[in-house]
Image (tube, rainbow, N blue to C red; front, side):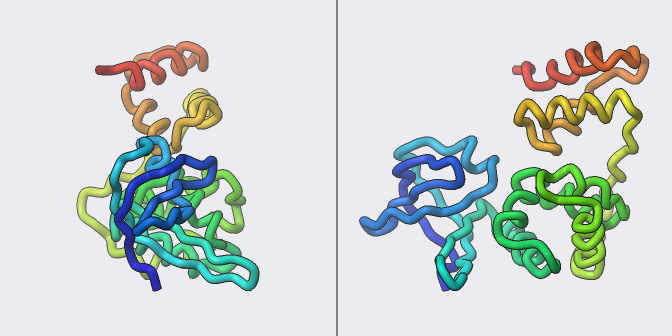
Length: 193
């Protein structure tokens, strides 16, 4: 079992990073956030999980042990494979997953590409007993139609659900219900210094 690796990034692939470890280039599938911050030549350390299939060996890497643990929990859900579990962690961070499970907000998982309503319910149900509640976790607020459209527009632009939700939080409460105006205000979140 390969539990972790430390090496230098040789290349950034569409589905992962090629990391040189002891003269060998390993393709490691990583969450989008890791790939977005990666630079060729940069050294990095990842907690990993080796997935062995009949026709392939695939290595998945995470910046924290907690993310790897969440990945393992997601793999235990019926119908969730290695790539879909990685997609969940590319869209939602562990705090957002924990918050959604504790507050029984299955619709949060439905925002992950490739996760339908039934799979979202399976994920929430499976994780319910496995994730300890943490004090201070606020429910993710229910969205009105305008904010739902803004969230969809932001995720369509390539922002993660977590980033899009953070951007929605800066929209003033007295802002008009016009979707274009709310989107403009939300985009201001990403232009802050």
